Amino acid sequence: MSLTQELQAKAKFAAENYPEAILKIMSNGIEELKDDKLVSKALKAGDTIPQITLPNAAGKDVSIQEILLNQKVVLSFYRGGWCPYCNLELKALQTALPEFEKHGATLVAISPETPDNSLTTSEKNNLSFEVLSDLDNKVAEAFNLVFTLPENLVEVYNNFNIDLEKSNGNSRQQLPIAATYVIDQDGTILYDFIKEDYKERADPEEIINFLKDK
Image (cartoon, rainbow, N blue to C red):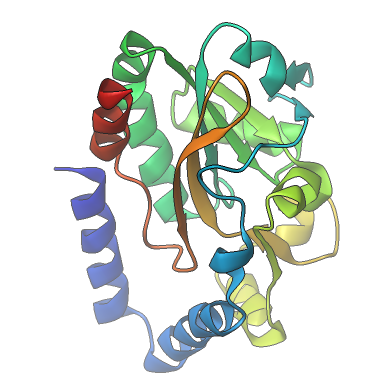
């Protein structure tokens, strides 16, 4: 089953099992992001990425620009290890990692989680690629990916025992929208997949096919 199919199955299960009121709040949150035209403001193919140096799950600083000296980078922004859709994506990316590397790219994931929580996410999903902590969403902001959750959605998350203050180490209630990029060695974005709907992610097969063509 492809990642896209897994995500669709997860979304179908949620639609059939969550209370209508909760589904409505979640849907409204997505529609608000679309109304804000957040995707249109985000960095896209043709743009140049900013300097990125962030701590990994072990607390060691990792520079994307240093990685780019040797190979392209597949860069994935995800919301956190508490998000089931993110975990499906991370596992699929891990499976695709050998193909990414075969075609000259390494994989790096970024979330606003603290390094300790990133370590938990990495261990839970058996990840062998770098998982970086973008504290306070500073890098995601530079990509114009950040949004603040509405209060009713924060309440829904709390009812699901999702504590963003604990996960992210701050009280901002901010997350990045789902985004995946392929970055060329000169820092230029070659490929982008950016969606307001957290249930949609770049399928690794699409990324692999793009790398093959490059």
